[in-house]
Length: 172
Image (tube, rainbow, N blue to C red):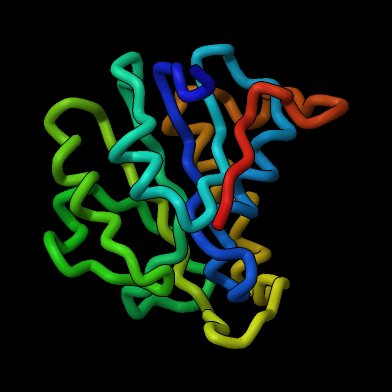
């Protein structure tokens, strides 16, 4: 199964709605790096709850979620959240689905970290496929945070000449 990995890095969001595409964009950039074979980078788009509920394999020990999360900080600010910092139940973001429920259900079984970026603008319902400059500038910092979570020295990891084929692409 494609999701068999000890660590999954999952980019969540809708690339059609400006900064909501932060997670998929970071996943896309991460797929350019040569990562150990037990790590999978997935652009889950808006299908993350489905992924978490139905496709997560028992080999997974760590889940790193990348998403835009609004908490009132300056646009482009990055922050690491624990599952317990996400409200239970009705956490509804720009995707109009509840991400926290499957995460709260899994948090005692696997290590979960959410890396959030404060959006400047989520354009829904208008289609705007570019990130705002503030969120675009946050991508290298998000990659560095993921590498730190993976225990990989960001300064020494090599970029692949082509995106790694073992990365999964998904979406809305």
